[in-house]
Image (cartoon, rainbow, N blue to C red; front, side):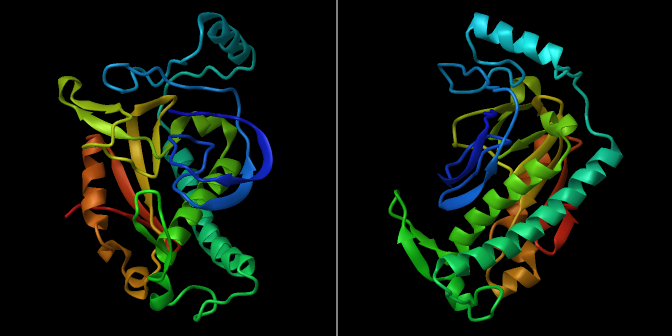
Length: 266
């Protein structure tokens, strides 16, 4: 589900969203947000699932106005997957933005703490990574490693949105939530967390998030052992393995500040 809006640079509370333009996770971040015409997806009242990701959930009159405006602007496009050249451009931008988000958030976090410095200078030590910062709404401890990860995800998504061409923005979703749909031998979008998957960035057919081309999962390892071997971070392999089931042609990659590593399976 994608909510698009325009606003100036503001401090925002980062909440989980299925949105190209919106931030994710929890914590605070400061960045620019801009997008085109608003677009949402109808929800089945009994299941909470999105019925058709390409249809807007608007009143008939408003929906017609939006459709006419999009037609005039040439925004209604034929559903298609990205070419190899376009996908290579996506990977290059994603790789740059993840590395930039990692460096920027580490630097900004220290400045916002009144000149506070990590023990290792540019990144926290293992002891700092495990330090508890606060207790969240569910009563769970939030460590520095988790807090930095949330902020870096938000910064990376904003960077990617700003750098990729508008012509292919209909081919992306950030943190869409999927569940298997045996009756149609595929997946559907859902609001329900139980037995669902929520990848970081999904490349898909134009305005159809269920026709999945590839999945890019972002990780910002804090502990030294995980920075050196990201695939050994807790739960990473199982997570990537689960994403391979989203589509028979689905390509899954792990993205860290060190680069992109395609996942080949166990």
